[in-house]
Length: 311
Ligand code: AMP
Image (cartoon, rainbow, N blue to C red; front, side, top):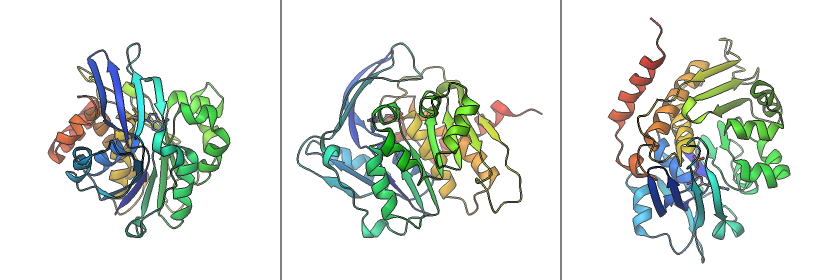
């Protein structure tokens, strides 16, 4: 089943303890769609500037990602600059230039309208909501956001959250959004804002799903209140940029590839998220995801199982 995703397609300048890259292809929708494309068909909605050329387009095409919804506008593409020198789990943002995204009015192409899954990747919550409104009949809507939008765009963000089934954010963002430092209480607060399920990402420590009574209304299996999946301890983290979006791509891509959405499917999806997030960190930018194979994904899924198996 196809996923439509809206979010940033960007140029990133990144500094990590392993080195520096200037203006490499990035953006939340880019990482998400590369990761999800290993599981199902992906269609992207975004805007890029005149600096986005055939070389960048080819990265999407190589994974058969539908780019008909990527609009071209006069001006420069979204630009983000960040570093991870003190803490590999959290980016320090040095510069965010919305550029062509500042005046973007997303239109869902006719060819995307039969998508059953919608992912609102990190971007202005006003844009996320506009896309959500154009796709009222999707089966499952998930989304992401970040401190940038929580801090200065809270009213628009709260409106957007009302249209979500599943929210994926990192733990600092969950605490910030709910204005509560206790993660369990913060999760409860976030679940009251709209989404029935919250996935909190903990960087190198994995991710926790918080379910509510609304998560599986038609399922007799009683969902756990929470489920924790590990991250893979990596020998070297070259660049954590996009790990969260790749987690989301693996998670949502796997869900979209399954016939039934049960607590067990969600738990497995969390592991596939971890697999994709860990691969994303192994090289700068999208390099590792571009070279990845489905066989490597399945092999690492087994490593994840072994990591947590008791008997
Ligand atoms: P993450 O998965 O959280 O590491 O996301 C990294 C990506 O988010 C980078 O490729 C950036 O281009 C993108 N990004 C950074 N800031 C923003 C923002 N305010 N809105 C949308 N995308 C952003």
